[in-house]
Length: 113
Image (cartoon, rainbow, N blue to C red; front, side, top):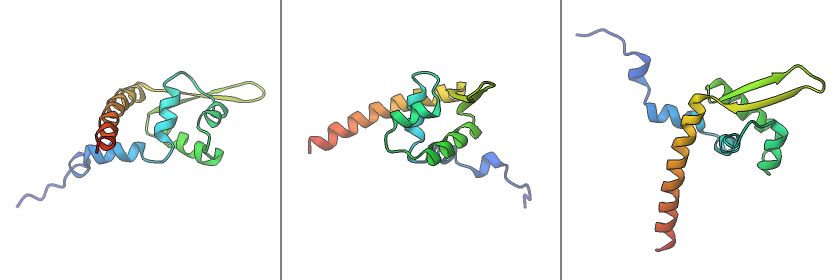
């Protein structure tokens, strides 16, 4: 009998792990906006009309913790914070472009029925 404990990699499905990292109503729109360049939270609030500031801040924090976004704080008055994509976040954008293309196919398929 093999008593070796499975490693974390053996216990976690990579697809499920990835989906959990971007789950949340506003995470994909946030990443999509930041793909166009560094953004301040106030810019994102204007670009994502229905998001609440508290929810936006929470989603930004989670994306930063997952290594998708980089937060830069500037030592000035008034305080200024900007978010940008990390290399991992840039790879996510490439995946999102593919998902967008699949969404176009799905939309076409559903509207032709």
